[in-house]
Length: 370
Ligand SMILES: C[S@@+](CC[C@H](N)C(=O)[O-])C[C@H]1O[C@@H](n2cnc3c(N)ncnc32)[C@H](O)[C@@H]1O
Image: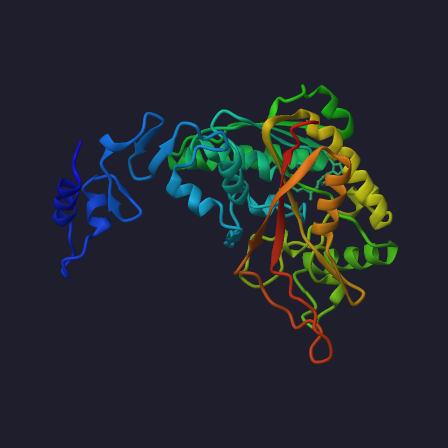
């Protein structure tokens, strides 16, 4: 084991022009560097191992496959990243509420380990499933994913996306993405076939609550307009934030809004009052939680809304509703901030109306005594 003097000597070998320790240089020379210091791998405890280029991994890690250094980054409460259109985005954007597969992969990497099972009971066109497959090539290893989707159109799109994406990957010489299990049907019924405690991570994006029929009409109009490529920059506040899938489902920040407020026709169950919507979600999550392993997590995308001169704190409402009905406890609210999002002039010059450039990602843990 190297004493402190020896470690100092090692450090001095990798100095920059000012004589300061240069971790980049040390890293290039494959020396284990953690927090800017060369570490002595002989000093590691039995449960620790140095992973080249990634830092020290603790074998007791039950949450994910991340090293200490990666963990520090992954516990940040804000994910400030835009995701340019990718993974057959043109096809997936027909949905309107699709989530970027690489954002899903990022969350899957934070809350599961290679080989774990991920469930998305509201799978849409498969952002979660594709993310789980990306983990094989761009993360620590493949996760098995199961998706439920009651709209056959979205199931077909997921299958086509995978086929086309894999065709392109093969042409580039990249290995194909694994085909995950997308089941067509109502999650309330399909969940009955999932054994208790068999899911390590439930990652989903809930169907939104629609305020009322008027709201639906506005959304349908917005969807039609956005599909024609035009959008009202003047600031129709009804279009700001949340919405069915909100603007946050958008993966592109390069001008024209590419997805509308989503598949309003596909979510007839989400058109009642907010209380009914919350009750329905809470009941469903109560059942979903049985499927989640005691060490597992439930991670839920939810955008807030600004409507009728008031902020609808849907993320807080949903968190409280789930906690009061399902045996889960809120562990965190992560914020996905998309810096590439277009801004509109909402409210100017008379009223402050927030430009919703973020979505919330609620993180729950199953209760011990459920
Ligand atoms: C917000 S979207 C999810 C989008 C998804 N994250 C993606 O990347 O495509 C919610 C989805 O839940 C589906 N859905 C709503 N109620 C459902 C139910 N009871 N069972 C199964 N799917 C349902 C809707 O059709 C919609 O596609």
